[in-house]
Length: 175
Image 1 (cartoon, one colour):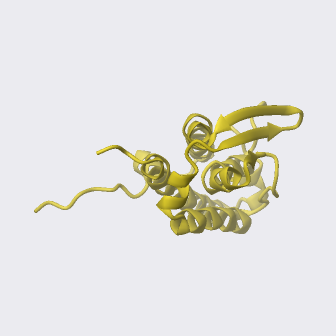
Image 2 (cartoon, helix red, strand yellow; image 1 turned 180 degrees about the vertical axis):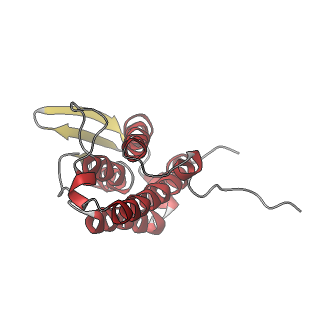
């Protein structure tokens, strides 16, 4: 049985999106326990040349459901939309992405296969088909930003393990 575009993109995006959402909850609890403010975590990065935690969270949302919205529109611009500023706005952004993916009909995504779309950032435009955009551009970016958000929180002392990155596994039941 061949795998569908929906199966290749959506279930794993939802799994890790849920893990990142839980990561934000743990980061918030860590801050409350340690007495640090939202802005301290929001501005945290792994290196001075890297973008902050808030950008990583925004990018996780953009490269999951935002990528689907871009496929629908025929153009994806990662610089669009507001940057979250605190834990509440980070959670709202991730919740919106999850709700969008949960509501996505697999037939709609399958019908987009072969459709042309553009990645646009400033003066740069890259042409894709929807499936190549989702699987060769957004999916790797999604995992990069999810892993970077996780790394930032680990570096800040938030108690996390590998299981926190994996999220809810899709296991079969033993019979």
